[in-house]
Amino acid sequence: MNYQETLDWMFAQLPMYQRQGKTAFKKDLTNILAFSKALNHPEKKFKSIHVGGTNGKGSTSHMLASILQEAGYKVGLYTSPHLKNFTERIRINGKEISKRKVSSFITKHKNFLETQKLSFFEMTVGLAFDFFANEKVDIAIIEVGLGGRLDSTNIITPEVSVITNIGYDHMQFLGETLPEIAFEKAGIIKENTPVVIGEQQEEVVHVFKNKATACHATITFASDFNYDYKTDLLGDYQKSNLKTAITAIHQLKGFTIAENHIKEGLLKVAKNTKLKGRWQILQERPKIICDTAHNKEGLQIVMSQLKKESFQNLQIVLGVVNDKKLEDVLPLFPKAATYYFCKPNIPRGLCQKELQQKALSFGLKGSEFDSVNKALKTAIKNSSVKDCIFVGGSTFVVAEVI
Image (cartoon, rainbow, N blue to C red; front, side, top):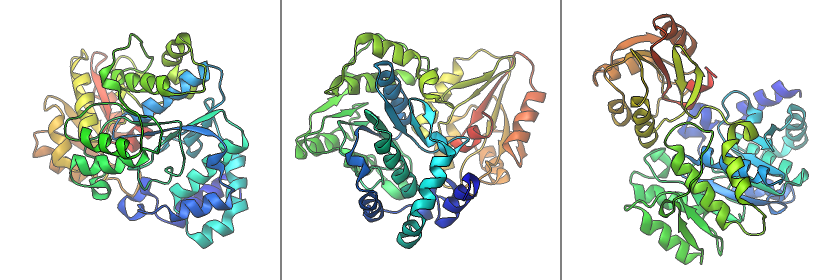
């Protein structure tokens, strides 16, 4: 199979959460453990940092990778979902895995994958771990896919576990309350392994402390510290992610990381790791900003950031997935804006007409479009050079504009 045929086959095997949602979610590590055994346990052949949490885990993972790259290490980085290309999920020192390696790996293990009925995510985790082991990375930053305790990535024994924060997202899988969600996220805390919690949230702090105590794990709260560093990643919310990344680096043993490595690494995150979609400015005059924030806590922060922008008129290109609790997120958006409602091009995308109708009940007015591209083109056409256009609501909306 060539690369495109390989991807088509992977996407077709079993439901894929990124595209289809709840039906693709599997609360079980049996498959990934079986695959790991078939691959001769690649996750045991490299050191790692495991990064979970509701918001900020992607940015924090990229910050950690950038710092370690600046220190001269060969750094693997596994993140999800991808924005444009599948190969974005698996990188070493910012370079994506080759399409050839993806094809050859899947072809080689195709019989096992079919027989065992592995999910898209399980296949991808196996591919990433095998690639990092074969390439002999010094360390890999592994971002949790969904939850933590039963996530396919949770077969590693990391040097440090990181949990950024807890918010309301994916409740249909992780629980309806913050402590329930925190319990799932806390599943990445391992025996005698330091854990860094990004934010000390009163409702869930006991969940993390209890789990850390049970695992004899040293627990550190990044929010207790103040650091005088800056990052090239825009958006005020990166201050919290920056604290979490630096605190995790301080907990990492056996690696030589100087102050200048931290400083330079934080200033070169986008350059070193190719991170996109986080308060990314696509153009000026009119200013177009996109951000992948998609849950209540993430959007609260992004909307606060948007209020700090100077503009004549605000245009918002908005699309969401169909399992989003609209009554939680729509009230966060400003009424003083013109909306361009659209459907991201995935099966999980919410119909633009339904979004428009629901938004109207929250005082958000605008037109509907059957594609993100049409919505953005119309927003640009209707804008003066002094206006601001924000594109967001879903990772998949942002993926179509960058």
